Amino acid sequence: MAMATDRPATTEYSPYFARYVDRVPDGDIVAQLRDNAATLGATIATLDDARGAHRPEAGKWSIREMLGHLIDVERVFVYRALCIARGDTAPLSSFDQNDYAAAAGSDARPLSDLRDELGALRESTIHFFASLPAGAWTRAGVAGGNDLSVRAIAHIIVGHTQHHLQVLAERYDVPTIR
Image 1 (tube, helix red, strand yellow):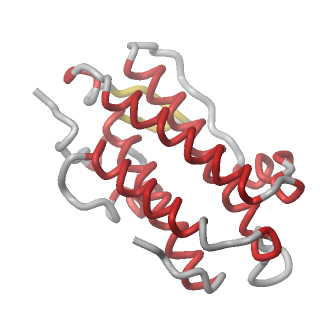
Image 2 (cartoon, one colour):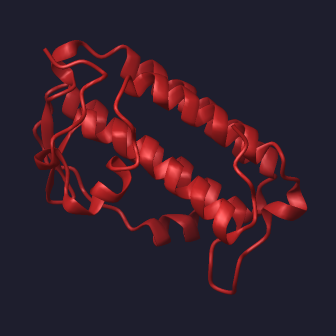
């Protein structure tokens, strides 16, 4: 019986997502979703609106746009997890993160609004994954033309957030607060 502590096999996600899954340590992925949210929330809480407009260079996302991106990605991936967990076999489409970011209008929003939305979304994500029956974790479907399991999605969400925390630290000079 698969539990929230089992890592996905490399056959449960496309090689592209290995860069996120590999960042996630072994252990309870629902607990890691909680810890990951707390770290991101504490890190963002150190920023004001002026800092939210910062871009490391022309053509790169602002901090607000990056937060909007995190919101979009988590929503898309949780929707994918919902469909797959419930046994829906219809292939799920891919999406272009840059098109989504351009259409989101995140730079026009207060940083606190993005932070609050991201926190509420993650809380919903945690409730969703925590409520899954054991058999749902290993269900797999197709998203963007690739196999994808529910447990891989949970790991991708955590690893993707960790990736962007590292980007914030290295390229935007925003230290990670744990």
